[in-house]
Amino acid sequence: MNDTPSGIKEWSESRSADLSLITNYLAAISGNILDFSNSMNIVASSISSMSVNSNSMASLTSISDTIMQIRNVAEAACRPSVIYKPDLFKDGDTWMAIYGPTDRVGVAGVGDTPELAMQAFDEAWVKG
Image (cartoon, rainbow, N blue to C red; front, side, top):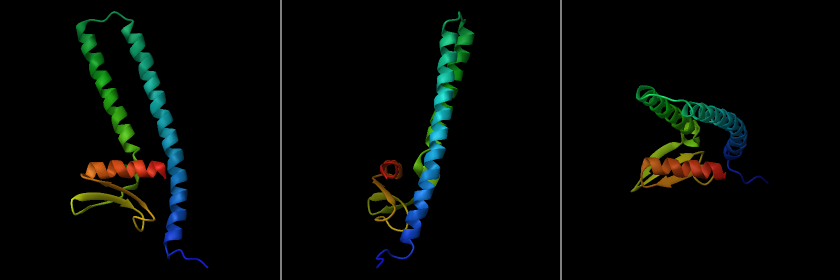
């Protein structure tokens, strides 16, 4: 006898397939970010060993800031809350981010602000 409510089993199976795909995707992106970061560290090391004037140093600082911004955007784009776009709503004084048919079957994050709810969702997603 199957006590699983209609739709929950199917959702759970599709989430498992989604999780496998997204895990592979995140691994590939993480590898690319790491490769990019390592390349930038090599460039920074090479540049720091050169003699530079104040104008070129200001340009290097600007490039370094831009690289950090790109890295931050890339990391943010990989968050589960960005990829899966859970429902976000306020319940009393608490914000909730929920993905799935119910909070007991799906993944949920709770916080005092929308951002904290999304961060809690990301942590819950990673824990599985």
